[in-house]
Length: 167
Image (cartoon, rainbow, N blue to C red):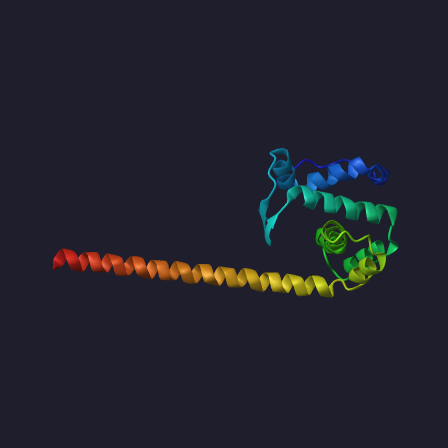
């Protein structure tokens, strides 16, 4: 991946921020260009265009310091040892919830709910991440069990064929 040569002031331009976000997500950019509406993400299906847009919203909130709690929480999470990209995802979840409610329930932006969700980080993120991890482990265990059952059935069928040839 080519390195972008930017100055901090370049990021004042929303279009430049969008380029940086796409640069950090080449697989999503490729999917968008190919017209793919859904890809398999680490936690299930996801919309690559929506993912890039949510990163853009968080970047704009941070750049504009609006609401200021986004930047405060970002600094707190960084000081706690979280990585920059994961922090962007954490900050994106509360605004994604606001967007979802506006889309599905036709509710207006609720700043108090947004700020409360930000303040609850990282606890809510870790709880969700733990549940997703358990879900993935459960799915993998089921796949292993199904594979073992399938292998056992194949072995039994093979043994049966051998017995039938002898008998």
